[in-house]
Length: 163
Image (tube, rainbow, N blue to C red; front, top):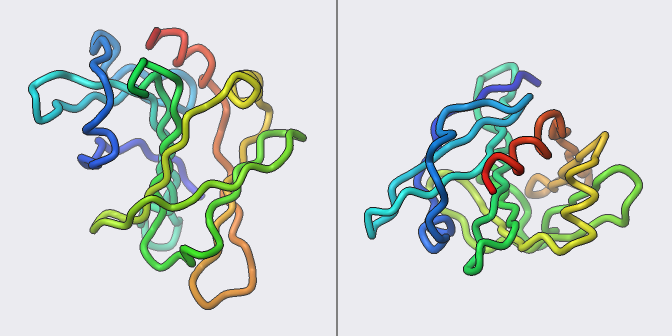
């Protein structure tokens, strides 16, 4: 897989997030990039993103976004996966040797299927010091989970910069 950071396609889940400073827009932190978008109310919202593409077709396989995006600027993780995943299986998130988390898909739109989850203290701490982050998804009509590696390189420093 090749790493590529495209601009964010407007996602309805991000439209509800509070304003964050846009002073780092376009800046990279290791394998993460700061992306900002203008919300319907005119505010600018920023977060870190990393996208994995399929080598064969350059199609997006997974977009991972992290930031202080909740209603009270709480840490939040947003995953955008391709159409064609088995929604019943959910999404598996594994950080190093921490217990696996199962995320529920919230909606599918033209750009893909999405899940967002607030990051509690232990999960956020594990992400900030992670050596390995893996996201598992089940393609529809498959019995094999597809695992995608997300690089933790730069995540902690990028989150610090967004604060």
